[in-house]
Amino acid sequence: MHILCNRLDKAFQAYQQEFENKAVEVLRSGYYVMGKELQSFEREFAQFLGASHCIGVGNGLSALSMAFYLLGIGTGDEVIVPANTYIASVLGVTLNGAVPVFVEPDTYYNINADLIEEAITEKTRAILAVHLYGQAANMKRILQIAEKYNLKVVEDCAQSHGAAFEGKQTGTFGDFGCFSFYPTKNLGAFGDGGALVTNHADLAEQAKMFRNYGSKRKYYNEIMGVNSRLDEFQAGMLRIKLRHYSELLQERKNLAAYYESNIKNPAFILPKVREGAETVWHQYVVRVNERDEVQRKLKSEGIDTMIHYPIPPYLAESMRYLNIPEEKYPLAGKYAREVLSMPFYNGMTEQEQEYVVKVINSL
Ligand SMILES: *Cc1c(COP(=O)(O)O)cnc(C)c1O
Image (cartoon, rainbow, N blue to C red; front, side, top):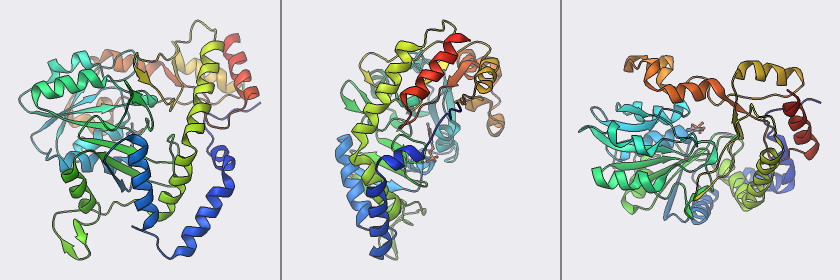
């Protein structure tokens, strides 16, 4: 048996007719950018999250860099970021000329909120919470700290569409929630896409202009801007996915529950869910010693796995100018050496999961 780590065709097939109908509808409409599909998606996604405003943009990184820009964060400013995350989270900060200040993870792979205060300096302007692998960071503690030090809060929700903390959706806690709809994300499009979410009307207004050359009215450019828009085709596809999203999430929950109750190999450290958090299982990430060896063995049995992520952002070549020594974040470093993402996708069959578990338990 050959098991892929991820498959995107299955979730398409599950609702194939609806996707195809919508694709034809958009193609025939004559409107391809900034039309009614985008407007509808923005309204529906905001409603789904319980947020006041949603602004579709070109991709997740663009949402992040726009968020910091619109909050006035730039050269000379510091932003607290998790040491254990995908590089794009950090690029949202560095693209604006601000300096990322890394903080070690907790046992849920998110930023350890108890270590944030000691990383704050007089230059700190914001905290970036990343809800990694689909699980909410400790937003209660993060908001308390942000209030105490008068800091902005940006949430990277690229992996957490629909995840909640104490009943509230990720993306609605901070000044901006930043979403990606890259195809591999839980709410994935068929190309690039992203969105900003906010409860501040003024920030929403600015974001709407900024994504479209800084204009509300064609050729009247009020503020500096970029071109970063969510096109009609992707917005239409996302509307279909959103309609079925609770089914897709339930399926992911079931897949996670199966691994949780059936993986018995004591070398495998399984993911834990934070009290009060509702995770959407973007990945099912285990930790294991001799990870590369385990990955090779699984591969030889036909099981593909992935590593999210092998190099923590503060050790990336592009971040060398920050001069951060490897030993500064031992826990993030340990996670990068031990994490292994199991095959996990909508449409994964019981036989496939059974096979994965059987091989793992026999290692
Ligand atoms: C995917 C991802 C991004 C970037 O999203 P893009 O749409 O690919 O630009 C940012 N942060 C995290 C945590 C991600 O997983």
